Image (cartoon, rainbow, N blue to C red; front, side, top):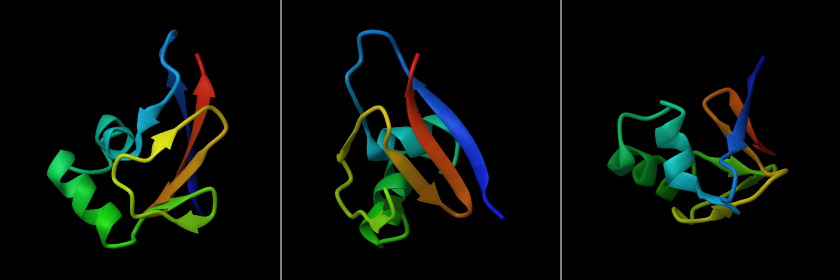
Length: 75
């Protein structure tokens, strides 16, 4: 069973980079760990493995990591 979390983009922001989202939500200890797990193929974006650390996530994107699903929404 997965844990679903909504991540609101701040007003004025068009996107958030993938590694920053993992870090902001506390799913990793820091940016270095975020980049490592992404590079190892442990993160999915919209159901597909994503290895681009700076992938720009926009409203509607869903990120899966270790049983947590984060959905990017408008604030």
